[in-house]
Amino acid sequence: MSKVVVIDHPLIQHKLSIIRSEETGSKDFRDLVREVALLMAYEITRDLPLEEVEVKTPVALAKCRKLAGEKIGVIPILRAGLGMVEPILELYPTARVGHVGLYRDPETLKPVEYYCKLPSDLAERDLIVVDPMIATGGSLVAAIDLVKRKGGRRIKVLSLIAVPEGIKAVQEAHPDVDIFTAAIDDYLNDHAYIVPGLGDAGDRLFGTK
Ligand code: PRP
Ligand code: URA
Image (cartoon, rainbow, N blue to C red; front, side, top):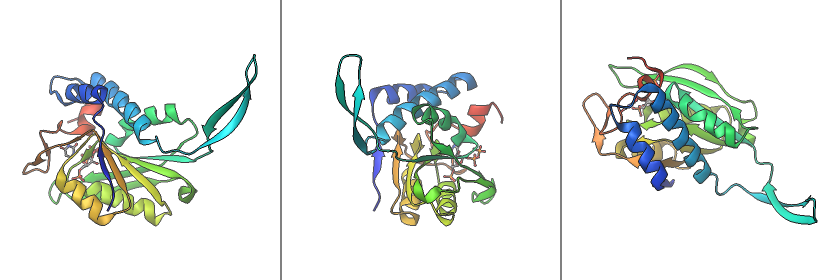
């Protein structure tokens, strides 16, 4: 079974509490999601392999370690996942970005696919699927299904808030995919919104209703 890791660094928890507040407007919401995603990306890439290199400083040769050429792919689930892409690209400028467009049908709550564009060399990349919310888990399961069908193999998930039922759905469908999140909330309400959650992540990021 895959790992579920709650990244409870104090800075992340502090910022998440402001993100959740209904008083936080779109600009601050976007800025904070970005900051939290950056801190989380730093944490989840602790296991990237390094290789020894020699660097000539102005004084002498230094034995250093550099990333061993690992190829990264970031895959946001549209729309809300977009808010987490830029900070990862800041850390890994050579990462490629794939997009998966899914929305939850408000009646059935099932994900509906409307867009998919992924890097052609998915199989060679360490992939990070990003979406701030794991509610029923349906969107994430569908996105990972798609990524795997196109050849993706080494996949991690980065989210801000999940609930136990969503995590269970993802783990059952994709037991090889580890999930990193900043919080595991209580439950889903009758409209499958996370309680207490933060409301509709896409709407809050982009100022829509
Ligand atoms: C939200 C969120 C996830 C999905 C989670 O997207 O960003 O993708 O819901 O719900 P689930 O786990 O029950 O599938 P939404 O469908 O609202 O689309 P949007 O990002 O375009 O607003
Ligand atoms: N999608 C959101 O944006 N928020 C929720 O609480 C659940 C799904």
